[in-house]
Length: 81
Image 1: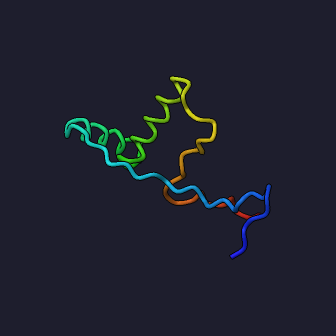
Image 2: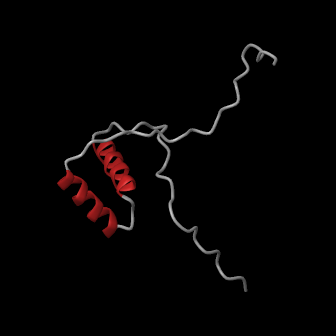
């Protein structure tokens, strides 16, 4: 393997999502799961949505935080004429 030349930036790998073990009170988890179901999200996606909203409201959401990943079926293309 060759060493990268000085000043060269290494190729960036796609950023991977972090996995976190979260302990919740069962009643809190159930409430989040119900809320998530009402909004057609998974409980995990609902927790991330709520955390991002809280960070944004507190002015602490990092600028480099990407958008929430889109889940589910991609939108249908418009019909061709």
